[in-house]
Length: 278
Image (cartoon, rainbow, N blue to C red; front, side, top):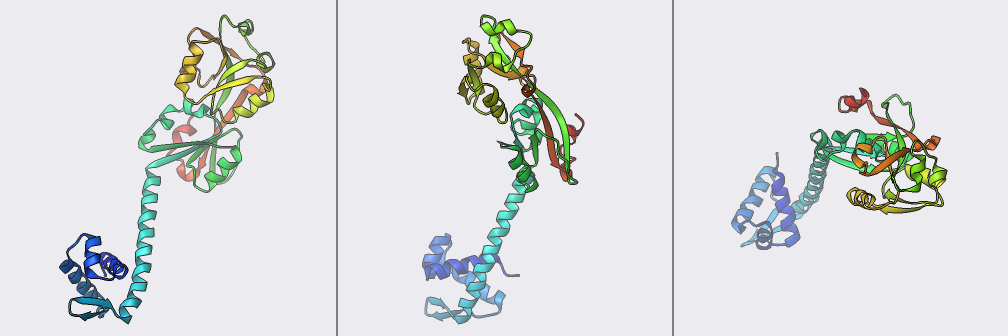
């Protein structure tokens, strides 16, 4: 079997045009490169160089061999890239979701290094999530509707319920037992920048409100703690995002409830079997 390194040396030699320049580029001595080219000829059982004094050039056979050497090295590079890609895929989990709620429900799955793997999380619409799951972009997705397919597992894992969080001095406190979107609409409200599918709900029911969006959860929580501006929490995130000196009032409109389903291919059943038990 021909050593692929010798083929690489041949390509570099052809591109530089001399043993000296090629050896400098390859960080080996010129005599070592010359011996390597001689070894390649022995392995091919073919003379591919014309030699004149200290100079060698590719003969016609050598030029034809060079053509195939480039093809072989290109395929080797593709093979190595594919192997790297497959290795990274087995060491990572790509997760897609419509809203961040599942991240609070299953913190061990979403935590850095969760399940001893690299975790990647993206938020998309349900249609794109399903398409990308089938195309193996995602290992698992969390969507808001049940689906049925022979090759997929679909399991309802939670219902998320939206609450408004206000200090006891805020006039909305009078609705402390329950509240409607219409009661909140028109208020300035603190909001996380990434709430996924909840955005459409707020656009529908609170189009007179102004939203102060924060991308950093810690900053959002700090602003809420030291201001009277209402904010949102859910029954899923309440233990993490609940703010001292505030009450969380459940919103009772139908759109304040959102179901979530975990969906993944049956071949991933052993990886996500803990979800099927929920």
